[in-house]
Image (cartoon, rainbow, N blue to C red; front, side, top):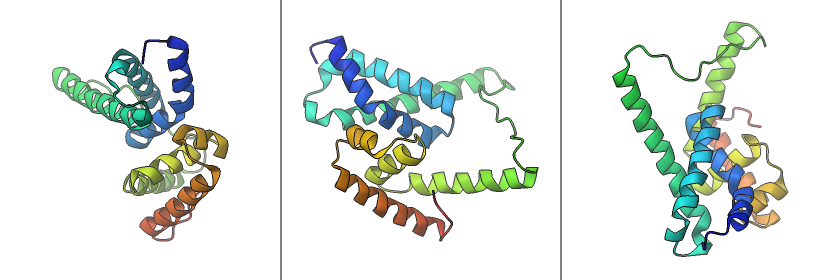
Length: 173
């Protein structure tokens, strides 16, 4: 909080996958999630002195991440209105894996799973998105969320059960 850059770098290392997972879950665009993650940390660095309780750093950071995402949506909306017919920054390139109907089916299932994940309570969203979207291992997730291994395993188990219920028995990761 005193502006010590190496200390902030440690915080970034401990929470970067959490912030990225938050953005990828909501944007579903890897490049955009990376850009929003960088912007989140830039804003956090600029306003770190406003953090009143260091114990609330993670929730404070997620609040900033959500603000960054909403600002990005507003900016994109304004840009679309200003330049009608402009192309989006990211274009989905079809994969060579399978026929178009299989690709469409996979995309639909992926969107359903992400919608269901977005509907879960935040603690489950964070744990599951770190594990299955960011590919973090248990040690990394425990560090990112400041949880014990046992608590993390319980969150992942309950979160997967909730996700399965929401998806109606569709296989999950």
